[in-house]
Image (cartoon, rainbow over all chains, first blue to last red; front, side, top):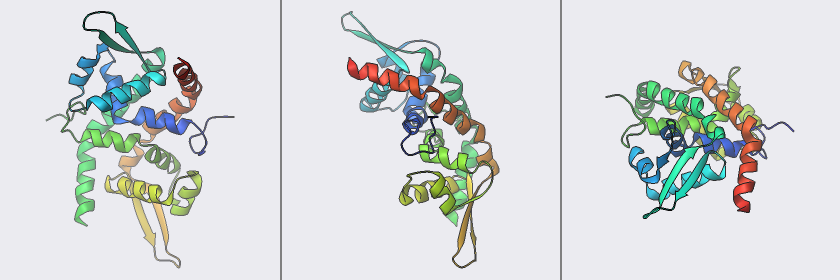
Amino acid sequence: MKADPFNRNCGSRQVIDRIGDRWSVLIVLALAHGEQRYGELAQRIDGVSQKMLTQTLRGLERDGIVTRTVHASVPPRVDYALTDLGRSLLDLVAGMEAWATTHLGEVEAARARYDAR
Amino acid sequence: MKADPFNRNCGSRQVIDRIGDRWSVLIVLALAHGEQRYGELAQRIDGVSQKMLTQTLRGLERDGIVTRTVHASVPPRVDYALTDLGRSLLDLVAGMEAWATTHLGEVEAARARYDAR
């Protein structure tokens, strides 16, 4: 059976949630140029809570999009990197970032018009 | 100031939420070939609740992505269509759908491996 997100039982709907989530998008973009430590991600993704960052990284790891490597140093160092599957997302999330930043002004203007009606 | 979703105060984060949301993606795709009535959308997007469909359409209208036209018939007919801004999203949401359906099997296999650890 072909996957189809218009079908309520198709798991591709959940995959859209995963890849379209703001934190997923920012994490994948932050890993575009190579692995990052947890603390580097926390710093790069301004304002993300520890809970959301940890939860999103765990979801991305579970879905096969990032790898998590614990180094046996003191204190232990935890690195995250994109898998091949994760790298296949890069163009798409870059497209989302580009659309959001390019059209932000238009979206905000539309909201102001709507709210003024 | 350039929009940057890595900045916690930048509105582009909200725009990513809007365009990455599963219901937004499915609505924009459903409108790709022209306007649709509310009831047609409800039928096409299998399993969406009336509440979520109404709420998402209102958000998309507010953000300037869809138009809502009420025809003075009995009963009144309500049509939705993409704006130019909405049409500029089509490639991106088609890319999200394509990634989700193409890679669903890999994601599900990764989840099964993760859950079996």
